[in-house]
Image (tube, rainbow, N blue to C red; front, side, top):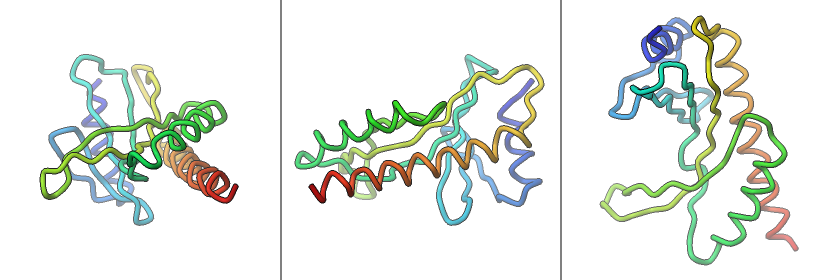
Length: 138
């Protein structure tokens, strides 16, 4: 099973216009960027991510961590965490990413997995941003 190849074919067939990156496969859905990360060491590891949904600063880091922890405890299969990346000027930027991670069987039905993964990622993003706003209002 080549899950990376299967995912590329599935996304193309569904009209997502995927393209290879150094990390895996990038595509957009409803104007939102997604990344499917390949894992050369584990053929069954399926990780679909919504990158950089919110920038973390020194001023908001503690609040971000509390809200991420809250969301991680309420939405199944999805987790939020921070990642450091270089911005367009090579300056380090920390942001919140949302990940959908499962171990797929040897004959995964991507028709079942991908739409649900996208829905859960969107839901986690909406929940995170709403809870962040609630905390800011108090």
